[in-house]
Length: 263
Image (cartoon, rainbow, N blue to C red; front, top):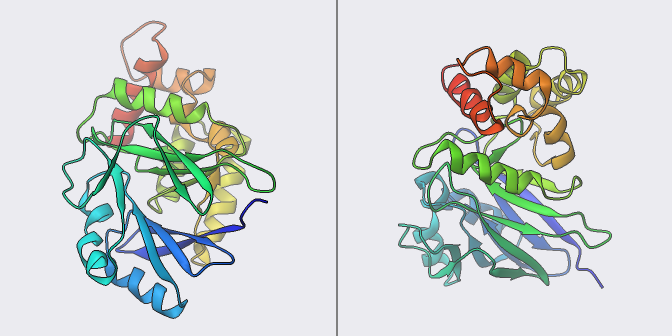
């Protein structure tokens, strides 16, 4: 029997999401990337739940800053990348390892680029549950993370790894950056009908303060320029900004990332 799992967003700071993994018939929960402890503690109290564990994708403060306070609240395992400088991680993880939450196995995927230590958590689908991806700051709804430590080659390969997952994968990223990302995507592909529809849908959601995430990998594949580097319309828009004839997809990605940084 597949456990029924709910994933709940706790807004934090200006645009972060802290994700709660909750099993329907249990009071214990896991949280993902708690940059701030107070909204998590408040949510736990209001929902009569207890903290069972913490999953970390990378070491930036808006993802780990709340961990010390949460560990004062409850002594729980903190899973995160083995290469991370974050001292709060007490269960380091490497590529190919797993973390089990309520009977669901999350595979650990190394996805450097945004930071060198970045990992993602992926659980394959098992009917009626769809596959789940906690992508941190690597793959965003409509975009990808900035390169603070890694190279464009690393981020390109990381996005290729994630885009190879099943189309029905639910993508839980860590920020509400969607509309800003889609504005850029529309500059790249102004005639993409799927992208135009997504802009309308997500604009309506934000007008009522509704999260635009999770998205699906299928939606990302038809609207997110950073994983559409092989699509002629994306390649043409990027190639117009670089002096390379017939550039490889990695060079197209690099041009897009530079363009977005200046957008």
